[in-house]
Image (cartoon, rainbow, N blue to C red):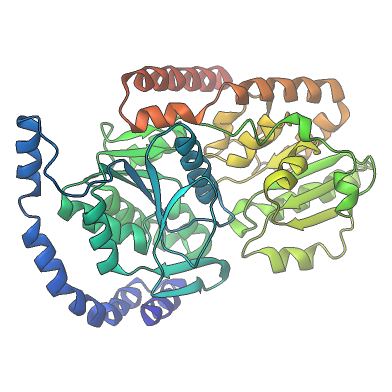
Length: 462
């Protein structure tokens, strides 16, 4: 697996798709070793669908076998600094509090997740992505996973990531006859375009279509990405909007602390722009730095706090050595992260590749308005001119204009913060949980949410 990964990545970075595919030959020995087990597993479960139908027909789902039931949420990333991991952890913890059986299935080195029902397989191999050292790839023990999913007999698998664990879980579910849904958390084709070159965007879409085909549902985080998936071969019956939520208990204005930023190297009483999230190139951080330089060039005074870590951190740190007004905090968690949000004045989120933007929701729950790009999902979280600003970040000077406007007009900024807080408090992860458990009320609420977002989008366009 290691040889396949590094040889394949080297070819793909050069735009050599054929060479990357040839690297699949490295997987042949591992695949050959698994074939007898997979064939036996398939033969053992080939009548699974027929038996399920018979049990349902005769109203008898108790065949005497051990059964945990509930849902399993499969993710290759957990405990990491990214929106997928944060979403999985938050929702699964809330599910446990509500008495819903939702087991997180992952494959990482030992991690702790208080309040989360966790099934964590020990990786056979774990390594960092080239050029992305904070992103680990874990090679899962396929046979052990097949056995455990067979033993526990979950009602449904919810797969978040099309990585090694996601692929193994999808294969097992199809042979077990277990229902499968997916979540399109990450715009992998856009990442392929930004990080590896435009020639790999369409192959990435082909991979996405193959991976999600056959899933009962594919949740998307925003209407923009629902439209994008429909434009790229997904069906309307399959794609549905994932109800949004934010932890309004953890993130709230009461965490504001005047001494927080001075303790992290900032000035006392300074105006604070915030950037929170994974520190990677596709997040448009270079544009953010340029905009902040232009803002300071107007003679106004402020600080920019960048919270998070990622593959671009070393380069970003080098660029900020001569920028004393830029603070790099690294990763903050728990109460520290909540205080960072609440102690800021304005969130800047110029990314054009995010499917939603959890940082925007968390800032809003903290009473902090946001300036976001007019591309991707974050724009659907902000009512332009009401709870923040939506700008064309690719238009020269547009982000700076928004920064100046909300810096100068304190009343407008305060009013937007209040509107953002009210909007965040209307969101609840319980709506998603009801939808996941196929409860009718969730369908009605989700339809109302979609209509509201559509109306807001039409109003902004008008």
